[in-house]
Image (cartoon, rainbow, N blue to C red; front, top):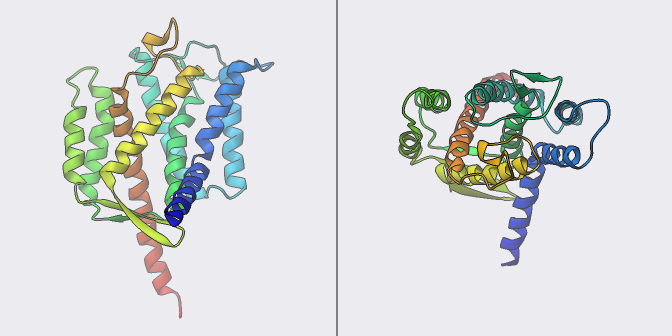
Length: 264
């Protein structure tokens, strides 16, 4: 029991360190909500704080340059989704800001990037390995279909639940292998998707409470984000994980021949 408790504490510590970027974003949201900073609107201060944190992460070695490339990709993917969703009225950013484009503050992309930051950090800290990973074309098509559905369901039927079923079928044998201390553990990949999606939904409630963005039902007063949003975050987490996993796999395959070519 003592060993199990110790392992749980180690796992929690690594998870907490992996969440450093999201924690800073939440702290910035809380700070700018409680204290009105001078000279610039709130959204602009949030962008500055996010950029500063990103620089610190890279300069301190907490993130590698390869991870920065992944995080930048997610920033762009998230910003494109934000521009579309705000245009469609799914949510809004009612505050003022010089760094707003078509009603979307640029800091919002960092909220998506923070998910990628967590995945990259956890991958490295827990020495994550994938077991029974599906073929690359299947993974690519599934990730593309999930991302496109965030746009197309406004004009066509919402197929998210069919996509969730496809995820279960495609990844039914897949496992994530990770290390805590000297021991390795396995978890069904689909279960890890659900757990991460659920905790992001909790984080979303915290973010909307601090005014990161506003859903239509929160314009008068804050209320709990609908539980159905878990499915949206679950699918977004899957897209994030598939992109990070694919890039890690490609990087690993590129590194293997280079290492084998080195003289003994």
